[in-house]
Image (cartoon, rainbow, N blue to C red; front, side, top):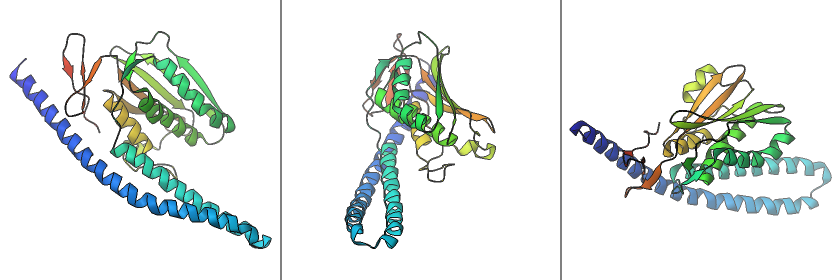
Length: 271
């Protein structure tokens, strides 16, 4: 190993340690904020339930208006609770439990979770799976829900009523790719560079965390999540994962991997 190579590895390790330290601080801060916010939200929800119980005594002419206003408050509270949950997921991601995974099986399982809502919205899901894919090492829960289900939900919400979502799996030389493609309107060209930014959303009631979380999870698996945009014709999100390696956690809890020859690799720098 050359001096340059050793220096590069040392700098990468120091950068990973600094990122871990920053995220630990953000995680602690997020937990404190979440506790302070969740307590009053729980109180609001409890009082909403009590008010709904008392609606029976309200004259029928006024009841509909009160029900509408209480429903609006309840939806806003639910939205805040969802935002808190997603923010905590981003700020304090759980340690990954890696295992060799058949990608086609995992994608099929996630499709089953998304199918009822897609059927209700008259959205067709098409599967285009490459057979005999090379296995990849991943955390099935985090990747399945944090990436695949997130991307499926995002595609469904972009389509609204009617449309098609196509899921493709394919093998490249050093990676396996999972593509979630919709035939909606695509991402406006002037927003493409911001699509993975934290708290940025093109949806009226979006949290702006879903795609940021999905990309971070892909990067923690040693891969990435990229957008292939077709303005006016749809968008494709491509999750790229390295082919299966022996995975370890170093003392700093950052992901490292070893090939069969023992050479180590650092995950790419998160964006």
